[in-house]
Length: 145
Image 1 (cartoon, helix red, strand yellow):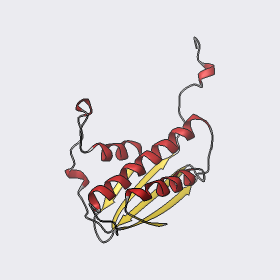
Image 2 (cartoon, rainbow, N blue to C red):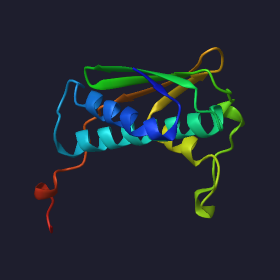
Image 3 (tube, rainbow, N blue to C red):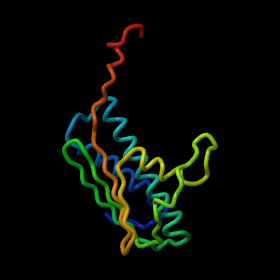
Image 4 (cartoon, rainbow, N blue to C red):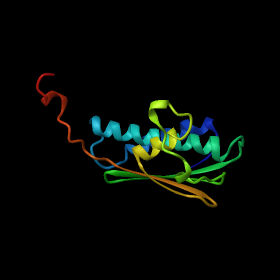
């Protein structure tokens, strides 16, 4: 799918990503899947925001190609853009206690998904996530609840 790199198109991207999560083969209900979907959508939201605000700063003609690859128990999402690239290793890890203004989006993306980035023409951001069942007991099985 191709969209413009503008904030007005973020909703389209996130709806497509949310829908693609439903194609991941595995349990499509329950807490594990809900957490999986929420984390994938959050990571892509941060990636798209950064791309628009930093890569295409002020432009309204930048193209973003979105490739969605749902599979058995996992999803891979690739965003390609032709804006200004960056070096993810140059972004310091934010100090969460201070409510940082910068670096938080990248931190969220890397916390929720495996991330690779290649600067070039196009820049290529790839986010991968596996649907892992939790080891927590179901709420009903815990004593004292």
